[in-house]
Image (cartoon, rainbow, N blue to C red):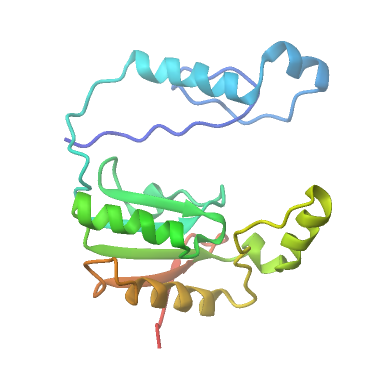
Length: 199
């Protein structure tokens, strides 16, 4: 049985009858204090969602046996863009959609404990990491007195970074399935995926 995915917004006005929170201008400081925080509104939306929720009886294993690694950018609606339903895939998101040690950790658990076999990597046009550099870490160190242990993973060429991410997956000794790994760039203006040749 398929289940519809409910999307939530962080807008400041009450939900319409469909359960969605329509977009509106940001509230003023005085109205924000009386209306509650964004998290309060998300919790209220969850209460409405839970009121009609029925356990779909799904197993934790993704139906399509695929894990999707993508950028956390709010413009990417992965389920709609890829025609996915609840329960179809594992979704792993971070800044840039780059394959870091923690992504390898999640993919390893996804494959070895929960049966996924395919990996889809998705970067996108207009990514914020295109305008950052590793200087970001030094600026943080100047501000807080400690340099982060993690790398920014900024890049100048989105296609090349997809290739690097594919290579990191294909060479990881922890992953059982490295033969079906494909990488794409999502165009935020057209909604289309463009596949990247790993060569």
